[in-house]
Amino acid sequence: MALLLTGAVGGGYLGIHRQQAADVAAQEARYDVESEIAAMDQSKLYDARAGLDPAVQRALDKAADEAKDQAAKAKKANELAERAQAASRSENREPPDYGPIPASCSEFSGNRAIGCAELLKKGFGLDQMPCLNKLWNKESNWRTTAENTSSGAYGIPQALPGSKMASEGDDWRTNPATQIKWGLGYIKGRYGTPCKAWDHSVATGWY
Image (cartoon, rainbow, N blue to C red; front, side):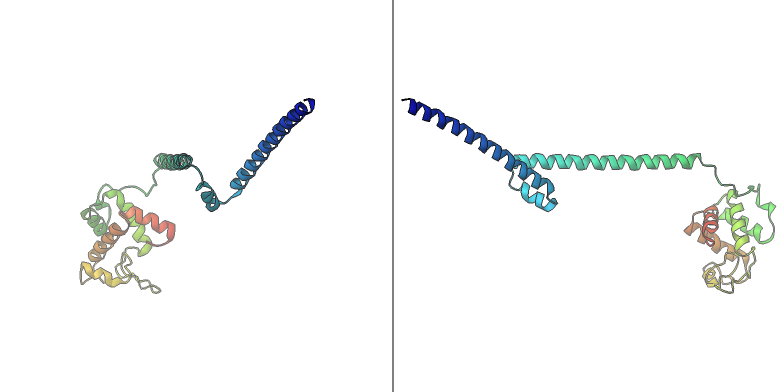
């Protein structure tokens, strides 16, 4: 009887020990699997997730989508903040000084007087005249027959080629009004205003 009891106790102890060993082995195996999954690249991780319970997959996908959404919102918020800061800096910046604004076109003579009159006809204000004056002083000094020998640019606005100005009249070679009308149309279409054209010329050397 004692032997049977001893055997039963020993067998029970052995069974418990085996169960504990199995639990430890299972934990170690799970740890190894988790470590391998963590080390996988994205394609392997996707394959590993394929074997998960569908509910778990949905939960993981939802969490990933929420994380992407939060990241996108954060990026957009940062962009808006940067734009607001840029706008604030622009508003606080002193406007450039292009020179005194004439009271009227009577302050000019010759081709500059024609230029001022055509400027107003084109819809610009007198505040743009200082810029136009600087721009065409630089380009041609307002000379109708000014020609760049290297590029072939011609006339007051230095059209390239000069024949472009024929769209305003056949007398484009000698008529300052024809040249000025074309030049103002070019400025308005490409830059918007003479002052923006002047800014571009200062920055790059041409307009």
